[in-house]
Amino acid sequence: MCYLRQVCYVYEKCGHVYPMPDQQVQCDNPRCKFSPLHPKSCSGSSCKQTCKQFRGHPQQYSPQMAGYCPGCTGR
Picture (cartoon, rainbow, N blue to C red):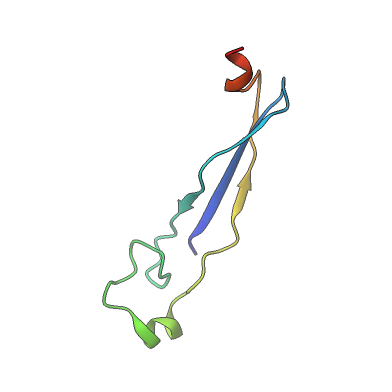
């Protein structure tokens, strides 16, 4: 099942958090309507009955970055 990855960089020296744009992680399952392998011909009520119609829960990832954030580094 496709899902979104939400990344927030946490800078250890200043404590600032920088959220990044969400990234779509693709599952390559032809039965997932968000997958690049989902057939274009699959649509309508048959697609709703046989294919996953929702993305999975977002994965949240917060890497700890040594040092200061870009805003504090430029001061």
